Length: 440
Image: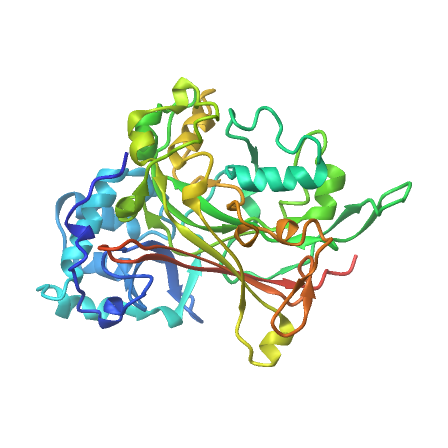
């Protein structure tokens, strides 16, 4: 379990990058998340970067300065590549060594500060790419509150299927349509079965939705046929990001039986550019608990360390701004909030179950947590839940109403960890805008 605290977590640390010391900043020196970027408007090679305040520390340029030695130097070299797969594959010791070296170099009293100032680029001038080449994408269904709410809409008498409390449910998604935050996409088309109709029709989705999720990037892979034990699962995880698995609910309703999601999900998935390492999240671990009346996980999904600190209290929010709001200069409106600490399954349990049959994961593979909803109405992670399946429209502050997303709507996910006595660690933002459907 990646629960150990070290010098990089010290809440007293301050950086010579002044913006990193601002109260409420997403990217203080205690965070140091990774991304892949280049300067906007250029054809520069993409390379790794680390967020510090409102700046990006250019890891490609830093590597050319050769400031580190040993494991940290080797890890830094891997970050100069246009994707972070090789760095992720080096595992937690390499990640920890590089974070420690970067933390020391970015502290207020660091001797390296004069040399490093030249390799800072304002985030406002950065153009982000996917952090890794994503070979496979699997999306779980790890919120019991979301599963129950959705089940109640479609199966009022039997909202939660009997396997849910035992099996970490998931489906294999489409890696090729995963895009970094800022990707705007056309409304998807597919087969729709209108109420009362005798035959389906092809057309644009009328019930387009978002899903508030976290993404998990795999670090070290495992060989085909070799399961990953729960106690070792987090040593195969690089870090977490925000994830929006856009969903066409009307296409989904017609196609999902008997094999599950297909065209309703594979047209677009958005992730935030910054990947927060598990090490950075160590101060925000919380116990993994279940109500006493609920079944305990099977033995392969149970471990004392997971019970003690397997969950992570990541606070999540969904914000919406419509085309009309932007035209009027009005700010986005928060639709809901929740916490990953309420998830029915932990990061480690999802990865272990994914491999229990011998399935092989590779560095850069992406795992989604599924929509993260809480027990309260305002903690719903999708419009499907917030609008009660479209029956109860939401009224926005400017008087507009929404049951599902309209063309021009922009959805932004945000996430952060905050705990008294520790520095706030943020995930940045994950945004996307719905464009009109393309002509047939």
